[in-house]
Image (cartoon, rainbow, N blue to C red; front, top):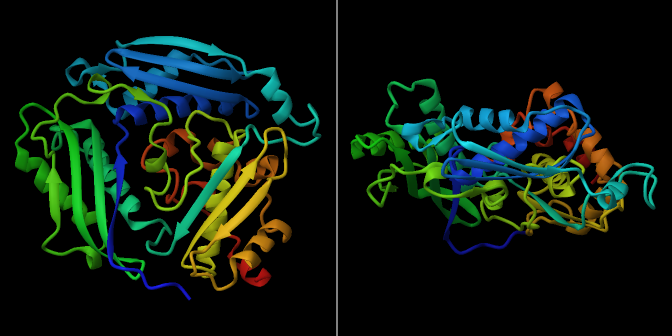
Length: 395
């Protein structure tokens, strides 16, 4: 039985595709996509930095394909909407600096099948990764981060689809959503914060009314009421934004990328890393497992942790926590994950089973993961719930 919890408010934030750190994540993942498209065995660890009039690309990349790194970076920035000097950052005229070299052979021998001490591909690094799922939304994500994503995503969709009507919107924005929880479940939306870059001539009420409209569109009516507190551009002005307003770096929004502060985080970022890096692939696997456990109604919420050593193919540990909501004990679920064969946590099997080397063949890209969350959108293969019957049968 789950414990009755004291009513409390929980808050999560999201940032849009135009946020400087997210610009970097998208550049790094666009580089990864470009490499994998022609060489699925590419090894990529790409880090990006953006600031006023400058993109810096660095990292370790080993690939048999010919990629013009500068063109990939400019195209990613252009798609976001930074294509005019008036905005303060222009994909077509900014400087691009490159500092890219091949992957270290010491790392390669640990993650290449047949090399090093193990015959099978090992983990690309040591570390622990977490996955989480909760039945409080239809996509089995925590409500605060899910709706925070939807708010900035919808605003970006409007900016792209109807640039005349929403000409006052510029790419950089943030959202923050606070939900009241009772007995561990979200019951009402308390506060919405949106800071959105805009043109100098925007009337404040234009943005405020649009934010209220979007919230009413994306948040289910059972959470809505007349006393929601809104803070829209609370400083009063947000004209200077994007890389012109703040320097961005790859991998700085790891809580935005995952579960909004709900559950644990192993500390590793995702973007710019090929799937041999378990920071990324094992975190996707843990989400896949946790989501299937909740979808099978074996728990209301579930967190899965896995840990690896560099070069070793089998995980060092697997841990399950259902926070007292499980229909079976956490120990029993852990036993099933370790020995039933329903899931395989070896890096090579994760990559193969989720199709992580060939995303284009399945209609998704790593660049798509780099804004609005890596979890909770059905286009990604780790969001499938195809193991529910097998899990129920095993329990």
